[in-house]
Length: 460
Ligand code: GCO
Figure 1: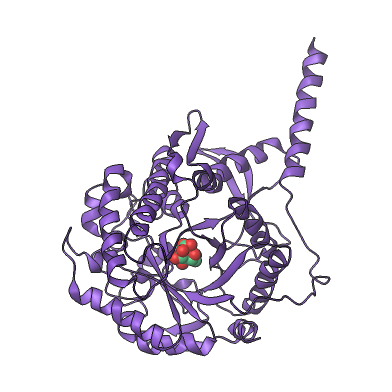
Figure 2: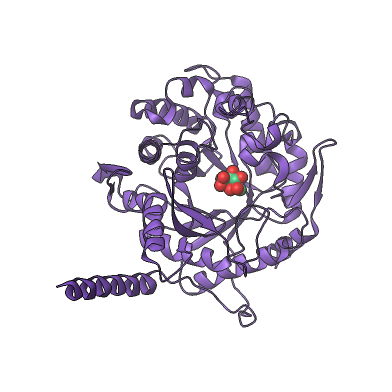
């Protein structure tokens, strides 16, 4: 009897392992053989991206402003070394110069976000001067032959919206719908590509599970509910905007960060379990929601959520894919956590805790194309202060995208994150993602040496 149980256990273990190993390969290419030249259509969208709070300066009415000045229970500042976004890159005032810099890169699109807290400083009342500002930015871009791409929500909420419970409360979604309709009516005569919500999984996991973004909660169930509400917000906004004048002729899409969770020990079923749970919450919920209007997760004692809205299926005109890297998880019970992140000795790291893993962009494209929607890479980039890995990063990630396109993937564009160094959320100004470096004392921008690889690729 004992030997039967042992054999059964062993067989199930081995069977599951083989299944997982074959189903989720950790693709690795030998880069000395990846030499093929990539070809992209003339219509390909090349761009660069920013987000309001990270670059504009003067965002004093949103949840991040509050977050930056408060401390955790142990008296530690929320942002590394107590940094604050403050004037950021002063992009609010320097946008004309910055548009010149965008042109110099040779790109034809610019993705940026509207600061909701500036446009709607108190609930229901809109600031004409803020609307005028964005209108001027849009006009200036168009005048410069750069197509504006607008993000409606990139992590920040007006303080008044958070005071009402923010996206924790499903009923609050309609407040965001009204804001979206307002700005769409103002700008959709000139803006034809719209991103609704930026990275629902990052917003909810960082803010409600890891607690390093506002509001600093550590509650996996709440994190999943917030993510669901953001997805619902996306599809509701999508429907509302489509019904407005210019709605049908606009392209409206969700932006989602994809990250692979690969087991640290491929022979260890517990590592696989940590990866599968993480991926199902972080990646797959979004895909199933957009695919068939279903969200269904059930990990007793951890997270359980079921939501169905069949009408939601297919409601995105493109999939905005943000991709940076994958992580390796090792099973380890530690308080409420059941895994730790590990990095391989052999990996080249960026300044963020991300390895350079271009194959992951290829894998992410293959994953999201199951939705059968055009894909736009809405963010991809490297934090590299020394500027000794940026060139390699750019060449290899764009190669990986090109390889997927060659194999038939419908990737229509690529936006480099970011135009210039900026306020990298909980990391403050230490992470240098910019194609242009910024001297924050003088506000001087300078093209980094490694960024020339991007300019050359775009131009060729
Ligand atoms: C995010 C955001 C960006 C980041 C970028 C680098 O993914 O957190 O979309 O605002 O700055 O991804 O981490």
